[in-house]
Image (cartoon, rainbow, N blue to C red):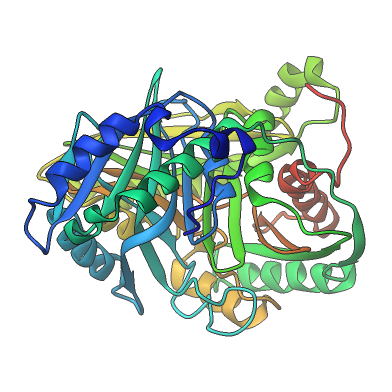
Length: 471
């Protein structure tokens, strides 16, 4: 990564005068004495600010900002990474990641090490050519520089080999650059579309009717159909600014980001796939939706009642609840699944929502739990094999990491993964946006198209492409 600060104020300061410089120096003193194969993690106190600013620095990057504001993490640069391919990618990346985490030694009073990243929706759906180049089937990184915020406390953590600790001047300059990147405000993006390529409406209608026919003939019960919109912008957009804008617009969602090379996959997901904390696990069903008209917040109660009264949406939602219950049930000695859904209100849409809370029989890695759940009928369909076969055969663009698990895990196997929806891939002046709709027997092609239009607003609004009144 570059050693140059991104703000003139940081350049003007001597490194020794920078807040946290003394903690970095003490950490480097300890790091040089560690075994050669260790990874030294030097924790430096920092100001509590939005994490996305760290993405101003160059290099591969990751971000996780939890919807409950409990945890915000951004990382830039890669000290070590776990990658895997094929059907066993969940287990393989967990094993490699655990070996990396076992080498970590934290110096100072800082947070524990975590690997951040994600996986493809299906093996080989993020191919080596095309927009998903570099992402692969699974990739989780231990960043070189990590900014982590929990409540009012925050740290910058440098992860290096002990031998690197002797290069004091360079590391102090990197620290100054990280502080500067975090300190500058991120303006709201103002994107302008030069050209837009979308799935033709007739092809969408044909796909929905094909799914309805498959359901009528008993080949499946639900398939989630996705569409892709490619937008060529007048100028390149800053992913850090888009992530910050997603945080301002969608604080009730988990913001995530993974940058590999020039491409950044980012989004604001309302859907938790799995969270494990010790023997406690949490998941949720989020399926069945109704659009929330712009500026019509006063109608939320009526919209919620309409959604709860919809037999089509209740049936679609129940398929997801039963699938989660079936996946987690064998792992849990207790599993709490409410009998009826609630309604979750987001900026653009209301969803039927059922939280699922369980207690494990025995410790299980969060990635093992994710493998049992993914893909739920909320993003794939049911039966799973038939739905995935339809997606592979009929969707014109590979999903890549869209609708796949993204998140983090630590050395104990704790962690959290969200479902990467309300998302898109940014690469320079190109934005590729994704949205899907669950298709069941009673689905109407026009209504499902309108639903995906609403879901596309999350990222297009953050890009500045969809003007709307603030809520």
